[in-house]
Length: 59
View 1 (spheres, rainbow, N blue to C red):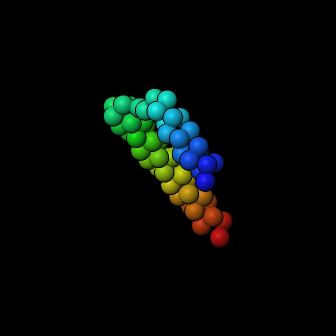
View 2 (view 1 turned 180 degrees about the horizontal axis):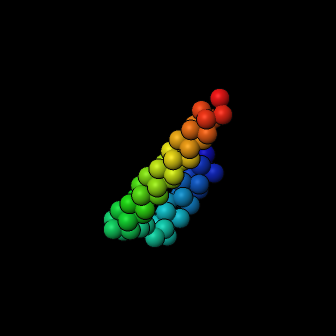
View 3 (view 1 turned 135 degrees about the horizontal axis):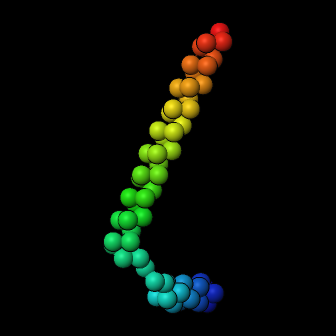
């Protein structure tokens, strides 16, 4: 039981040392992720469409 209490106390102490990002930082990071995901989705969609056209031309 002592180990569990020590673990919880150490965890709380470490969490107090963490520098949490600001709301603006989180929002800008989310925007980057969304835009990157959309760009990759469009690129993969175009590659898929081109490959489909190539396969259909062959067969």
